[in-house]
Length: 347
Image (cartoon, rainbow, N blue to C red; front, top):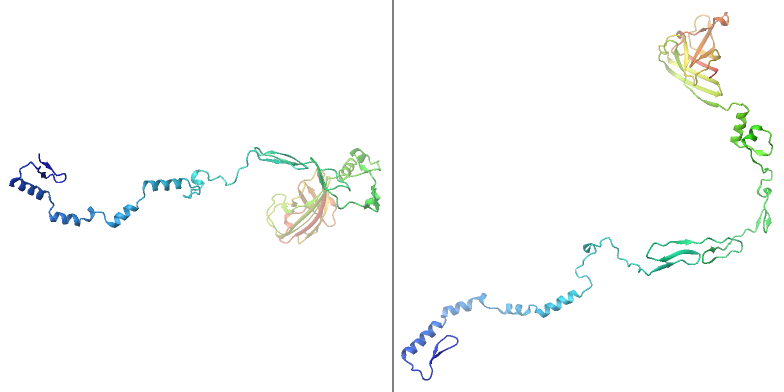
């Protein structure tokens, strides 16, 4: 029985088969139909994408083998030198310093002359022991809880004395000073002790108990012209005043010089006293008036005080004090100057 070839499937007769012309023709037709045409062969040979070139073959052969790739992966995985330069911030440790931590078993021990210490699982304090007493024979030394220092400049003499020196007040320049205590308030007020010292406070208390006035004050005030009916307004080229107050008594001095007499109405007052006067009215002071129109036959005799105002008094020549009058505002000119002093009492 005839078989076929494995590649083209051509009939292959057996020895017992009769070969006819038809069989030969059929075989030739089968070969012809299975054979490639020359054009097909040429097209296949010219198709570069259908064939592996020499360079492609070299590149393909150079590709990593599975075994080689595994070896490289294993080598990279075993590296400890941070090949990708990963930073501490990238792993959530940006605030951690690159310092070695102390082991829990680490301790700190206080040396001689110190106390404290212990293991470093908690904060520890090192304290200085109580120093020993220094003497001329002290040395630099420590004990478990104390220490001393050598004294390199011992005192060899004081005021010409050597050894264990005992000083007296003459040795320090106080030979004439008595060893008195401070007086009590009762002793200061009594004023009979002669073996105590007085402080400023005790002196003040003693003076106050004796009835001597301690209320002393001095200062400045600003005098000003004014009328008894209307103060008016004035301009000044000089306007000064000073006072001294001792207890209830007030002594004032002043000087006023006008540059514009203004428009006051009534008797001429000097206002602005530093303290309001008491009930003792009628006290007379001295006064000097320059560049004023006093009126025919009148001259300035003095000042009197009433409440916060100083009144200027005039007297007519040849008359008695009983007809002293208050100076009118008309006496003031644009250049009047008044200098005066007066003493009065406050309540």
